Length: 437
Image (cartoon, rainbow, N blue to C red; front, side, top):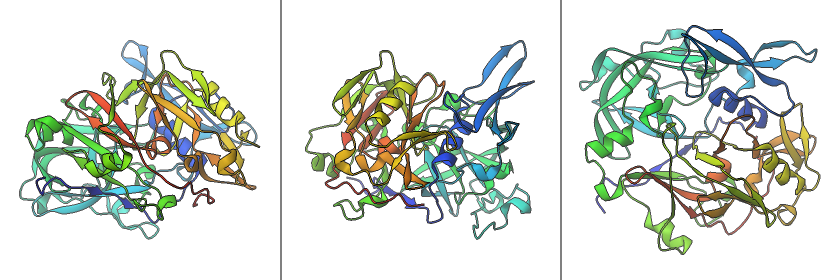
């Protein structure tokens, strides 16, 4: 194997603090769906002249309806969602080099979005200065001899709570684990809502498809699309893979490590799984996501039929979100589980043992893959309970299979063949220690 093909290791964010409600609010913020379960958070409609995000709801004419995330007070009044209610930090980050000489940024790799943006010197000093002990790496285009401004181009990511990130556009050299992409479009943040500025990460690297990229007037190609065009990766392996470990698995053979690969499938993982090759299913990328059929699930050996259901694989999401009936079936099978409307999610006693937890599987195409039992518990929920790693998707028409599910597999995102692959991740022990907070 050529030396440029190597594991791109993810770095655990030491300042990341798990919170079930905050992670759920982040998903409301990201996907702008209406909750169908009780709780303090809801979506209200607001007519705007123009608003762009992947799930906007067109009202007709030139106006559209912006779905605004709101929070109910204890007296029932609706107001804005404060920044401290949202999980705007990432559990894992990946170092990426941009420019000449290289400037290093810790980015969130996200298969649920398609922008590559980072903090830049175009931001005001009030945003770039250290906050709460966090000092961001700031891209300075004047210090890169290979940076070129893309005249007339701009970008803006807007979310359902009125928060946004926007700025200017350019091209530069991007190095991801030794793979160098020339003239990659990068998005320089010029304005950031407070929600974006509080996390440790320096920006985001989207790994979905360019039809949801926000650069105007012409959407930008993603790094993987450019790797393919520039033949940085072999035509036989126009893909990337994700292997997401956990703090729970530090004593397992893989030490709970997390990494991506670009241009090759790690055969050590395939060999450890005892299979000849990954299981593949076709994807539908028309909405920009890694979407595939997921028409059934099982809970404790009982099949849940979900005719016509689809799911997306989203590495930028910590939880897994599924339809309400499947969600209820899962928690009905866990002793002591209840729905906590104050946290807008299902919780269950931290004393529940692995033997008491059901095996929960979701279909990837025509094959079932099980969630690790240890990942059914996501975060401390107080009062001796834990917040479940699987929650309601509200009125979203598809599942979001985030890290709760993806930690159970070695995921292959095969862009060249429009398919998603999965291999069972070997986890010899289930560590049900109380979730880290």
